[in-house]
Image (cartoon, rainbow, N blue to C red; front, top):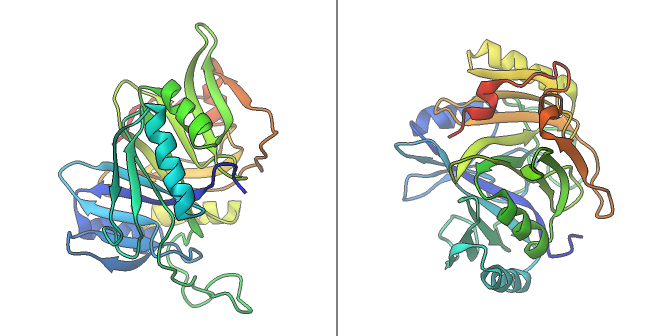
Length: 311
């Protein structure tokens, strides 16, 4: 159980340029299920093995990118205490409570802007919708409902912003996350990247230093095996989806991966693997000049577009 009561990533809300194109991509290609639409024109989706109302929110806008990322906490009492801790830390801005029902099926939320300029929120209650296989004598996967890449869950985000130091302080000292891996410029000792885990995954969110605030590098979905990643690569080619890079392996987190873009230019990832993170595990340290190996372990070469293309 996490020390501070943050259980896991719960949802991500992203902006898209054409809503129906995006819905088609995230349902027929990625393999999410559409759950609901609201009066503000947003679409809510979930993966087949998720049990909460939604994990991905799509909103049509004039610019692609991320609106906010939500974190499930253990209880309303924990959410209240964390909200006080966040405010008291002085690290965040625009702290506010959002009423139950503001997002369909979701209880009260506490929203705040972190030092990198990204909006985060905590919630303790969300409507339960059974997974595709249920919970009584379930099958291992939905035999008659496999769609697209068919990830089991929304897994993490990689976000770009300027104040990595303040964000690290917030996630480790206030929210109780582990720093699982870090990227350091050995010339001046500055932190170039930080990977955080709230439970036992290699990471639940990561940040890379970037001169602009609030940027999205990618949202990631989890697959069961390397063969599933290869199948995702086939689907990318079959459907003429814009490929970024892969299939390949990361040195950082040790996951196997492929990256591609939705029709609006938001980068997606599907991946599998990664180690188990425990609170007493030493932080893995990467030198910035070894980042090529850290990101693309096989080629050990950085792809400039991968580092600089964000929404």
